[in-house]
Every structure is written in structure tokens, then in C-alpha cells.
Image 1 (cartoon, helix red, strand yellow):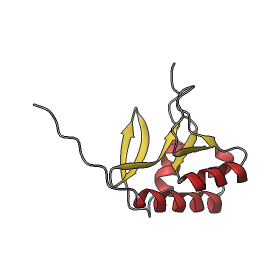
Image 2: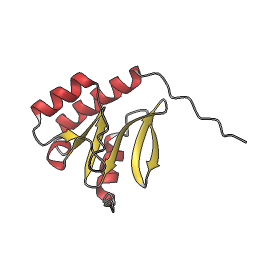
Image 3: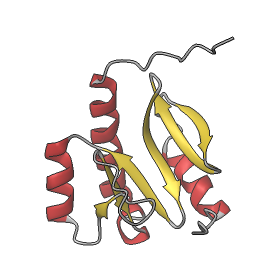
Length: 120
């Protein structure tokens, strides 16, 4: 299966949306992603943006925004703590900033990921 490249304007939109959030930018499989304490919390995939949310916030987001869905990077592979947001949701500045705040709060509550040591 061939994945669609994230358009530059979406990658830039996400970067600018997170400019006041203390996080680290990295690429995962060629897509822009953002991390806190080693834990991924946001990213772009194709034309959508995804966020990591608590189980309670996922259920609330899916109920409130019918266009949101669980993040499924390939058929049958659902990332359980992530929700995918289409443009109609992330272009609503107030809605998106609220969801980013919820995501950041949740991810900051997670234990930091330990860096894997390379085997020699």
C-alpha cells in the first residue's frame, strides 16, 4: 500500500499550531510528528492530523465531532490512543487548540520513554 505524502501546507500548519507547545519535532515514516518526553503526541498523516488523547477524551471527541475517527494508518491497524482529525476539525482554531491542550496534558502525564540502547 502506498501512503500519501503530507502536503507541505498541512505540515507547516501543524508546526505553527504547535509553536507555543514544548515538544520535539521528528519524522516517522516520512511524516511530521511531535513528541513530549519521548512520547509521540501529534502528527500529520496524509491530509489529516492526529493527536494522542486519553481514553475519556477520545470518546468525547468521537462523540462531539462525527468527522473525527480513530487513527488507522493502514487498514486493520488502529493506534488505540490516537484520533485522526480531518481538515474540517483542525481548521477550527478554537476546537483544534482545545484538542491540542488536552493531548499535551495527557501526554505530559505519561512516564517518559527511555531511550533504547544500541546493541554492540
